[in-house]
Image 1 (cartoon, helix red, strand yellow):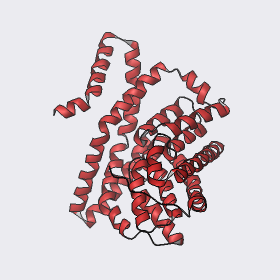
Image 2 (cartoon, chains in turn green, orange):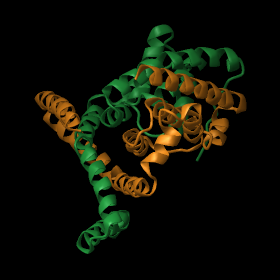
Image 3 (cartoon, one colour):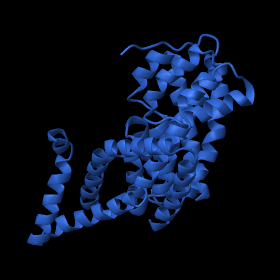
Image 4 (cartoon, chains in turn red, yellow):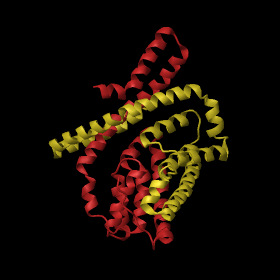
Length: 173
Length: 160
């Protein structure tokens, strides 16, 4: 309970500040609240749905299943699989580095490791959902379609540039 | 805004029904997982909305339009690319920020280059990346991704 209270300290302060502003007729406070209200309604109008989808997705398509089969496949199938695996992830890019190590250990090519990192950085399904909600479907689809060939190209270039002496080290926390 | 509700609501409804038909227990597990994840990001999410609301009160629209709007040209684009490359902002925070910038007059090109550099280039995490991949690979990856992000920004700006 105490932890929750701490987590929501700013929110509670903000609510008190907004109510106070309303009763005292403090104009800046009212304007800030009206900004917040707009953003909050925007968020609440789709984020809960998104998380239901993410949760269901997680139980029906566990990424561990895919991880087992990934690595040696080459060609288009290999590229397709690493992109799919990347799309099922969540979190910031540095969270992808340990997975890159696993891919490396399993024998994935340099090209596919970097395609994985590219797809991880900007094609994760939960992020695409948030992106659609905030920036629109058109923006999301365009950005993804432009990014995808660039990532694959970067994969090929990286293999040429660092291919020979490339290795991924395991970093122990 | 309500388009979102309709699209996401409809999609969620359909997926939920299909999931329930196939496996009730799995569905409940998924809902619990989703609720837990939502709850975990709720307070940072609300905090950032408060921060953006306060910041937008103090930063006049005209300033955003001047530096990130359609007349800002390469300056705005460059500012966005550099800030995006250096900083490390989680996606669920950067998207509302990007939407707010768009609403206040920033261009799609600027927002696109900001978002893509943010996602693809990481100066702050470069030391960590070097530990995993070595200096050469990490620097090249960031450099190529930076170029890619610039291309994505330009093409989006040109198409939207």
